[in-house]
Image (cartoon, rainbow, N blue to C red; front, side, top):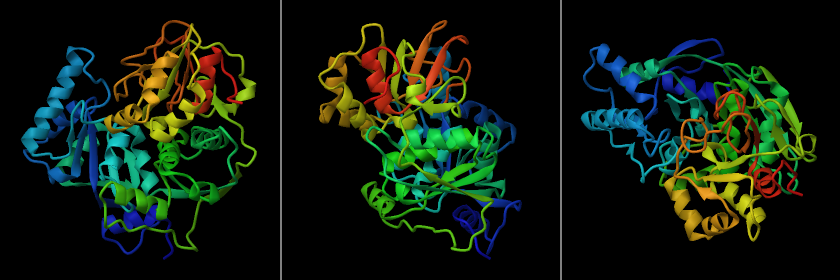
Length: 417
């Protein structure tokens, strides 16, 4: 039976020769991700189940990233709960503040996600690991406790939408603009409980940094996961992070898709998603002139070196508008160190930006950079829901790093051109 990439991965992990959309299966897991804000509830449920030991401590990856460094006593306690659980269970893949970063960058850069893997995590943007050719999906804290106990989880095999993206991107247009445009076409419910499988020359020519951005936001269209076929670019990245046995999985030529979407991005302009949905993406020109109070460049969506290089090219030698605050958020400590080594950090600070530790705090409006009443933010993050980033009356527009950096200088949303 012909299968898509996701169907092949689900079949392999459930011990079946083939699966089809709608099948209910139990599948073995390669990784189970927990963070400081999600583990405490899972630990409580795990203990209530009467289980003493996790099925396999090597499956678990525990990352401090949401409210770190701890913003208050409650946040400190959440980290302590996870830390002590990891020690009790013999979890080797535990990432502490200062030797960590945002989970969706930490796992790939430590070789903990590879082609063909089935990964779950108690964080909705776990789908990021689809960039390496894995199936990765967010789950709830209760499901995570069950996965810890038995090492597998049930799934209803999703149908797959194939997205063919072709065309050369214009200057200042990047992966974030591509995925914002796709989400605007699909809508936030256009791929609910489906797999988005990305193909085409644009993807093939895209760096891993760009692919992580694409996969990261698949969930914003409701997708269970976003999957990009592993190729030579993927394998080079795998080799770089110490994974020597990566085996790409390709969809069968006659695999059945729910539908096929074809998009030519040759004429695509920089995109900006208006409040309060990521699907509200329009050409930057349509919102040009919108006054902004704060700009955030980074996060698990656009917090990698390629993203910061684009911002650096615009900010170098210039000054941020005096009424605008700019927060730079590297998505891991390794990337933070690169910003220092290559001189980006110095230029950002000279321009008037502040550099935050590798944390999810600003993105979730819980730590370091909360917006006040009626303030307007321009963020390279992945969500702009009502009240997510601060006061319910605040507004957040989403963009790529080029638009964010240019707008920081202008004091209002502008095209990088």
